[in-house]
Image (cartoon, rainbow, N blue to C red):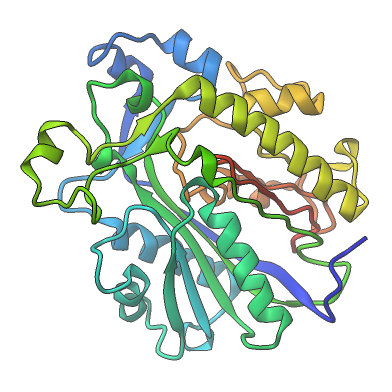
Length: 325
């Protein structure tokens, strides 16, 4: 059963940008008590990208957004809406999307930020899809980007091995039922909001608070085992639901973006220690665009392929079977 819209959204262009600096697992071995084998066997991560001195979130967003527009053959003035999913804004006011708008020449676009952590891109994709379905927009640029390494405690091996920086973008255009995004689900469970958090820097513990800095509250905190268990269970449930709703089985998928744990639950033969699927770190709202951009240029991936895109926060999840474009 497909979504009951007279029209839906399809992806017509993709773009991504990753900072040049690479921090490998071997580099981290010299910084904290960990090993390359330990990181790869549990996460699949071999390296992460880190923004350079003087480089900021808007630089990543602009590069990825421009690449997506070029890939789609869309002129900047054609864009009606820019949605930026991020948890690491350029500054609290104004919206980072508004700062990016003149950088990309989006003179006719309404712009806003969306904050939903690791599900940010999937949430933004769903919001954009609904703007198209209602006829409020015809051309939408959706970007997911993060500068998470600016919020990492590099003495905390529970988090510093996981996160990196980058940006990914897609251009959405109207599509007919049966093409483009077939089905999306989203879900929130705020009872687990403390298993991944960044307590400092907000209204309760403002940036001006010396105590906040001394307690290292402006850094990402995570209870790893709990996060993994909740994420895998939630992703398994919602992935099954959305594939059933779209009439697609696991064997029908040509491309998946699962975690190691989800791969096992799905019965997908995927070795997180050697797979090319997830060589890089978690980018929170950034995935899946940067890590899934390369398959669109591969001859083996055809325009009528079925695809699934997955994101997992605490626990928020979404899946979008294709064909995407």
